[in-house]
Length: 284
Length: 345
Image 1 (cartoon, rainbow over the protein chains, first blue to last red):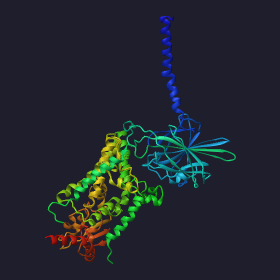
Image 2: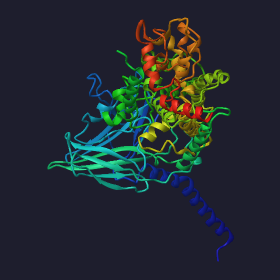
Image 3: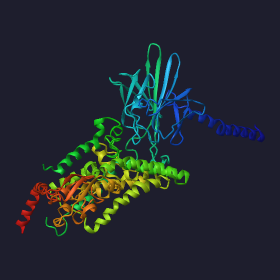
Image 4: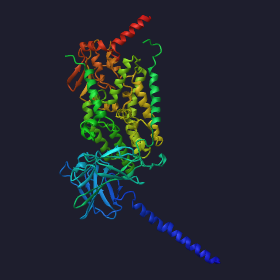
């Protein structure tokens, strides 16, 4: 039989281990799990927005050395070229100056003799700037996924909607090519490009928090989640992998009620119909 | 040659209706980039198929995102705060100063829709209603309140964090054009009532109710929504410096027939009773109906600076009156109802 003191000692040890697990190891482990996304086999870069003119790109799961930033006027204004920012442990700080905002393309590449990997995304600096129409089509890597079109300020990719992307290699469209869609909660889907190299991606639904649980952001309060589109292309000498990462929101009818909308409009219509009655005393 | 201004206007309205509602289909994606730089204030940003951009949207954005945010951050006001809103103002007013009031009657798709519905009402022989004279002052002041409250005060309060985010685009959430143009492009999304939070619901109730009311009221009341539209108020601020204007030359017979007042879709009695500069009223949309229905030679004029573009003529009045009464009713229908009335008596 164990003595009373021994039992207390064992309990104390167990509590110590438990304490370490709870407050020492576990948070570290959980942080590690958070840092390493499991929804995609490709590197995920995270955006930390710091005001209107600055965003930090954090490399979560790969070793990309630098980030290229393409301004919206690239391809139109010869003076506007891409900027290359080195990636540090804290990430790469991208900043725009002189109120030159709008949509910028962010690109990162890693390459060796066998493989060339390209990561691409878009960031909207909330300041006036030229349209990104030309910027999107400017060649940025050999294998590319180009949004056609990119949803603009008051639009966004949304679940249950279909959006087009052009896949091209050395500026030539790639027909019948596999494009894989990745999103959290294992929402993996496969699509193929058509004869013009265009793939139509139908965004899958994802569970959304209830209206009361939406994050308390002042304006654009719709919850979003990241997604990646990935395409691979093999030449005789090299394998090319390109990922386009962006975010998409819930379906257009999230937090909206069509029937109630028509009903309220119907009540308004009824109010207007009251004016149809002939006035009292009028003959015609 | 006797050109019917109304006929020209109908064609202009029809073409611009297609551009402002379906323009994106013609010019492809990013239509706003291609057209809006030339025509910065035509249609609704919620309509993804359109070819334009509404001027009221940037106003709300600047007030909420720029001024409200900065005020909340710095707790002080400075030139830097006002610069963005002044830039927006100057940018789109270069367009508005040129067109100014004519935007409402010649370009706005919502205005064209209401006119079309009123035309159907006339053909269905529905009653025609005008705003009673004692109500005019009150109704006219609503557009100023709407401009101040929905385009400036509520977005500013949202930017300062005093109101929920829904108020940041207060006017857009109420504007019937948002629902109309999206419905016309086959999207029922904007018609669905937002149920996110109290602000969403309140704006949704107001917007959908107003849209429904406007649709049915337009059959019997001319331009019911235009009367409270903040765009009309915004245009009225700058009408004095706009080259396009309505002018009047005093005439001894003027004010007797009041045909111009009856023809006015905005029910402006001052057209018949006052003279010269004041005839170009804040509510005038430069549709030109009053000019067509004026029986006197060169009394009412549509001018661009010193150049007269169109003026009243007895022959135009006679030609228009052969088919249509000043209030928009068709002549033969009016004759029929008069015959029926006489027969009953």
